[in-house]
Amino acid sequence: MIPPKATNCIGLIALLAILPLLAVGQSEEVRQFGSFTAGVKLGLCTSQIAGDNYGGYNKVGPTGGVLIFTPLGDKTDIQMEINYCNRGSRDPADPDKGKLDSYRINLHYIDIPLLVKFKTWKFQFETGLTNGIFISSTEEDEFGTVTNSIFDFNTYELAFNLGANLPLTKNWIFNARYHRSIIPIANQRVLVPWFGFLGGSYNDALSFTIIRYLRSPE
Image 1 (cartoon, rainbow, N blue to C red):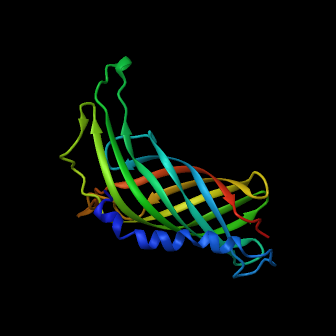
Image 2: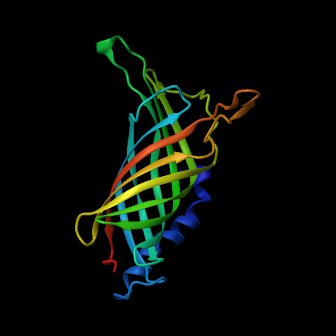
Image 3: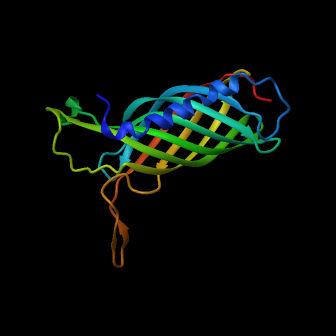
């Protein structure tokens, strides 16, 4: 059964998922705004949740999706994506050190990044914002599924992205990207006089993906 929060995303996913198919049929054109290049991507996301008291990018999950971009200038592009990403947090057991307890938080998101890309030398750097739609979550400890979570995850996530692309061939690209929530994903911040804002939980993630352009960009 599809989670209730996911049903609101289906129409948007279907609309954006066909954008690469529309771009494939285009002939090679001069690099200009409105000349679209589409692609697909697949990779891994390693993450943590800032504010859950578990440090380290120990949670690894899949990520993948589709993208489409158009030039803004000779070395600048604007790009939109729609991706699935499995983020969260993991505190593994370490029996050799006497640590038998463990905890894992699985968060499932649909991400819609809007990025500006700048080409410099062999690299293309990117920065922008991601609108994330929270679908569902599960939590597990050393005894199994946790049903009384202390987290109340928000449906919407706004995040900052910073990354780089390295061409492997003309159509194959390696992408590394940093993702950090701007507003709390759970456990809201509170203003404490003389100390400022405290509390809140934030996604903090690194993703590594391979991108396949469906036609060669100019």
